[in-house]
Image (cartoon, rainbow, N blue to C red; front, side, top):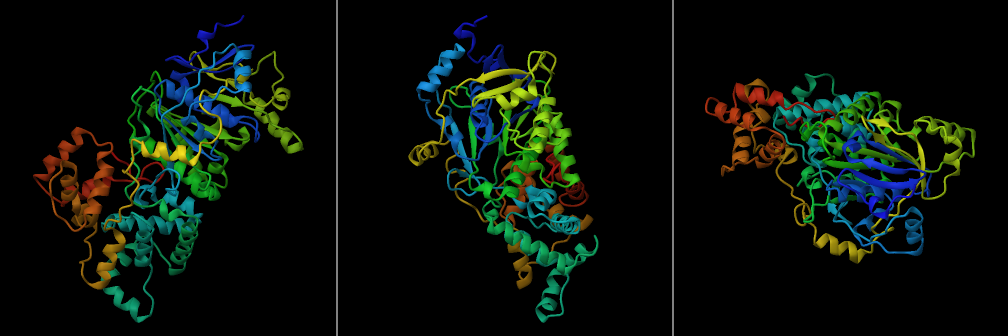
Length: 538
């Protein structure tokens, strides 16, 4: 039965995706149960992604999406009523209405969008080891380095901080320079050796891997001002969700950096957002393009953490949608969490391809009217097999549909259009200029030159534990002059992102009793590493 045009528009409860024998609707209340968009190159995955992103934005849900080819940038401009778009709309009984969506562009390299930065401390040793492709021994040494930095108040902001720290924990050699340096850095070296053997050769290997990362442009990613993820979760003046686009064409030239960066963002969202339960619509929807890069050669420990984050981030009100060529690119434990499916055409030219098609067909709830495996190979461009969650969260039977045309432009925008959007960006000026505050590198250089006293690590309240006064001063706006402002800023930002009034009140009360002593040690021990290596901000 034909459906009137006005019933095919998105609503506050669901998004219209496409139409075949049945209409395909994505229910907003179930959108945080995650999803998967798959299909061979050139079959329409990007258009499906844009249709979903537009629907979420209309519903007031902010969107983050990686743009590998640049095509998704067109969502920021008014769509054009081209003949093929009008024909598809007419065939579907849809009244095409050109539209555009408020967009913020981001770029790790700061060339086509606002710079995206994180501190080395926030990245954490697990993700950094993944980024550097370290083995177990090298990862262990990196964990030691982070532990020593925490205990000695050495804030790790950028790459030079990490390099300086690795040099500091390496065993002293026989050269005179090493002997002279030993006086000021010996406490740091002893602290490192107390956690196990830290060899100079292993430190040298990590340093060489850092050089590889620097050559790939990783230096621009680490620094300050660090990204505040709340800037992704905004709506425009019309109440529509902002569409955040990561310009990733250049970033994709370093696949491991790309995958680790997006995984870090998921980890930060997981740690920062409070529990939300079942909401009428998500707080944020995260599209992860080329998702297979996330899982390729990932060690088991990291895979377990990824599964944990994907499984639990749903309760924070975040929906994660993986975009890749084939469902078999995603591990079974993660695939089981992805309830909303859009499958574009796959080609079966080899026995391996045929197995992949069969595996893709088995991920859907069967429809007696469809031979799913056969249809997957017959789908035309713009067609898809879809199955969305319905009712109590059960998947609907797979349906063959024609995906609706996007309302915004299909294809990339021009440099002038991008510049205009950047000039009007709500975060213009916030991240565009890098800040090089005093951190581990500068502190270690002062110790080497004899102008700074070694930190007092351990339970005595020195190092990171001895700066609780700085934390409180930053939190409450006290105008305190201090030599190590960057440490207080980084810790305060970590604490205040999710700390509750009760915790703050407790800190204030304890400050009246002790500044830096046992209270400092207690709070220092509470700043443990989170699910994927960042600081747990509770």
